[in-house]
Length: 234
Image (cartoon, rainbow, N blue to C red):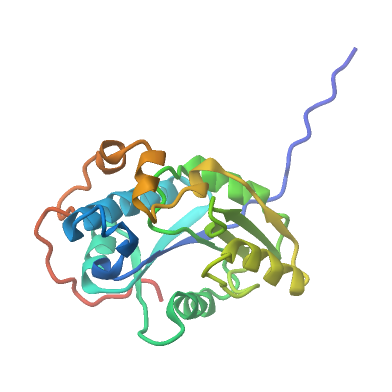
């Protein structure tokens, strides 16, 4: 008896730009303030940011990591990680407006938006998102436990608008359906937990687990220099 060969998905993987929004460091993680000092909140964000960038680099389809920064300190972190930098333009649109500008600059290139505060994300999680893409055009949404968006893959990047805010996972799925774009909702543990409240630290394994590991020169506890203005991505 001859066994049939396994079915292999022969679709070529798209080249993807990973986009990591990084709010102004001083105004990040404010819901952690009752439990953590400003320095501890910065350390927490620095460690998760480094993990997110590392996971993006391990994703087979990712060809570039682009960080949308809200201040000079965030730009310094991004530069030290070797990522490209786009500065968030101050204004009422906030994150969604900044991501829309990135979409416009990317043209038809697929984009994978990953928050900077995911303590458990891996490159394999992001590979799974790319594998789940229903086609081009197509969208994959990975919700967080509280209904936010832990990962948003759009091919091309501007095929549906960014809808970050409360309940953004449902908002992104609804936006894709309204646009007639095939969409998949994918549940991945590494993208389901973001650090918003002190109780989230325990869910991620505790303070030591989240903040362990070296970030290299210029870590959250080290001195940081003012970044040189440069925009290597377009």
